[in-house]
Image 1 (cartoon, rainbow, N blue to C red):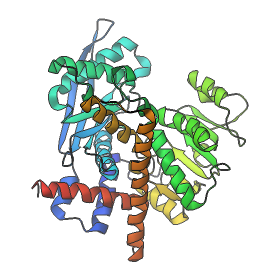
Image 2 (tube, helix red, strand yellow; image 1 turned 135 degrees about the vertical axis):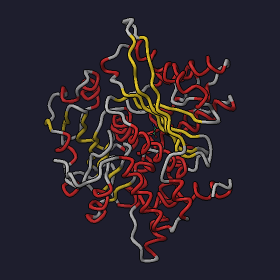
Image 3 (cartoon, rainbow, N blue to C red; image 1 turned 30 degrees about the vertical axis):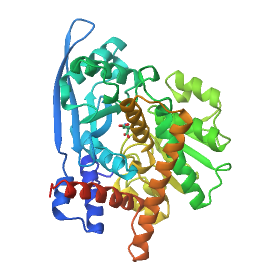
Image 4 (tube, protein in one colour; image 1 turned 60 degrees about the vertical axis):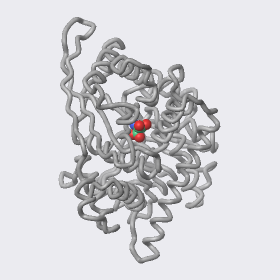
Length: 423
Ligand code: GLU
């Protein structure tokens, strides 16, 4: 049951998190005021003449939160429950994500209210192209660069890039990242969110003295990030994922889940089709005793009403916004190391940065180079975050890894705004 008193509006949560960091770091009041709201909010009314011949009108959003450090950057979600406040929150988190990783982007996010499970491929293409036409030149390689997110794919990115290229009358590969490799996407981009998260997992495990070979890992979500977290945990560290879930439910085998059987169940659209594992609900999965818990689905999964039942040493937020501020405090009190989303899942946008750089320069690196550079950047972000937390604890101020990461990210954006003369 959800605690009614708890704030679950993602944008209010994003503002609360910023306010907390602003207080600790004594952020300039004017900078704080600018950073509490997005710079530009676009709400789009998108008519699409569907393959049936009937016109359907969709609502789309694009929020460009802050561009002090560079063109805004962030994914596009296709979701039946999409709403403006969620997109605003996600665009704020993209701002902090790009800043913490120290890549030259601001933050943005987009979304369309739609259910792709009920649409055919042709209609998804028509909608994707219509969304880009509605945005027109509000996006572009040096303005705002979209990417995939929940229920959007490399194929959708290719259609969107093609549509934008039609508008500007030249091939604009660098305007969208997360594309298929055939149109100059990067080989490493598809698993870079999970890969980055696992580099952070490696560093945190070292710090907490968790031996990854014997560790029990639980993953919530079997989308792009969750599935790659599963396969890469085994491949990179020989680690055992004992449970995984999708929107329909979860499966658990203390001996570890078999890859072939899981892939088959996933391909059928329901992980519970896996034979020989215990079936659990998503709530039960989150409460399993484990060493590492990886929420890789959607927002507000660990809340005030279940945080106390979380039984892990390390919580890696691979989804955006999976832990509420109240839950974050409870976990912190319990001694769980809860590493924030905009650190843990920044591998996605770091990979996008590499794709954009390669598209702009038309010079392509090896996949090995891509992963090595990703490792360097995200490992530094982790260490910077831990060092910031320590610098406050040395002064007798206890802060969470999230607040430490906020302080680094917000300070960089505030300094860029100051240098540009915005306050
Ligand atoms: N959608 C991903 C995220 O939330 C990636 C964004 C991007 O690559 O621009 O971080």
